[in-house]
Image (cartoon, rainbow, N blue to C red):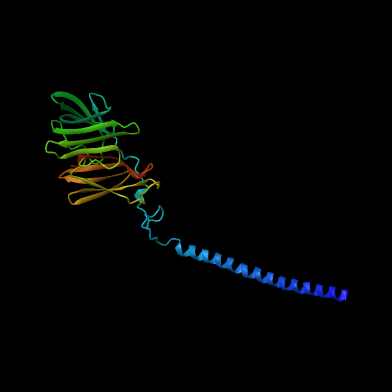
Length: 272
């Protein structure tokens, strides 16, 4: 009986082990299917969402703008310069003036057009020299003996140096205007009657994005001129005259907080 009982136990155990083994194999098979399904679901989800528009209203990041960017976004003309200088009694340092002046002389010295002026500081005559880059379109449109108003400034802002110029005729006609450099928006009215509109045509604007060139749209009466950073152009100012436009720098996404920076110069020149 012991032998039979032992045989029965071994048979019972064998049967149990067989059932358990089959159950285990079926369990392994049933557990692999959800893993495969999960992977397929993730892949399908990623494929469906990647590249599709979001509903958050966020600006697109760099590289997501539609269409090719203008070639002028990357190209620059190394000859473009907005390097002007105003020296008072020979000193081109810090100053802020708005004086009536008389043109004493106009001369070309190398690649500079140099205008010598005698200005009136509350009854005291001051010798002022205005240096501008020579324009290939022609010589400056003002002449010896002309009465002009000179608004000029040069400031040391510790982190950067900022300067501006505005030269107008006795009739308030714009003769020259510029900033080099200007951090932030362009000064209101400095270039009037020319209106300058910065356009973010070279990629999105935003925090921590790639520094990009503005497209500056210059509008005067019924004409508009578009100039990118590192480029130049020309606006008709009247019979036989035009505004020579040099945009040395016009960029956005500068530094850390989508800062704008400009260095540009306009001067009225004779074209005939």
